[in-house]
Length: 205
Image 1: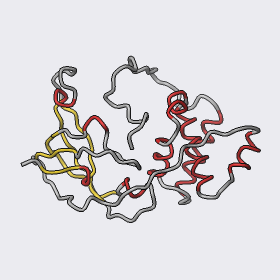
Image 2: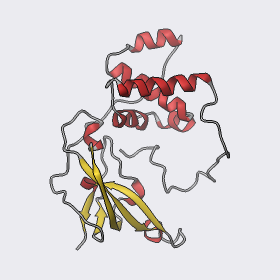
Image 3: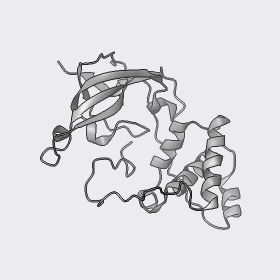
C-alpha cells in the first residue's frame, strides 16, 4: 500500500530525532494499549499483518500527527470494530466523543503466479507494483536491482495475510542494493540490505 507510512528514503522530514536511553513508555495508557493489542494477536482476534495494515490505513494527517502508541491504539480500535468485538457507537460512548478510526481496507492478493526460487549471488529486481492493500516492499526499492545474499524460512505472505486471503507461505530474501542506485546523486557509496518477499522479486538475466 502506498501511503504516508512508507517514509523510508524520503527527504524533507529533517534529521531523525532520538534520545539516548529513552523510556519505552511515557504514560500508563501506552502500556495498556501495548498489552491489549499483544493479547488480541495472541487470542487470534487479528494478526500482525492486519495490525500493520490498519495503521497504514490511518488518514494521513492523523498518521503524521499521532504518536507511536496512538497509531497502535487506532489500529486496535479499528480492528475491534471491524471484527465485531465492539461497535463504533459503543466505542464513542465510552470515549465520550468522536473516535477516529482507520479508513476502509482495500482487497489484498495471493502469491504472484510467476514467483521463483533464488539463490545467493542471483541478480534480481523488485517488481514495480503499486498494491492498494497491504504490502511489505518499501517504495524506495521498487524497480531497483540488487544481489541475493541469503534466504529466510517461509513466512505468511503479508499481501494475503492482512486480508484473510489464502496464500502459500514465502521466504524473504536478503537483497543487497547499492545506495547510489537507490538514490542517484543523493547518496554516499554504501550497501543497503533489505528483506524482500519472494513474490516481490523477478530475475534479472
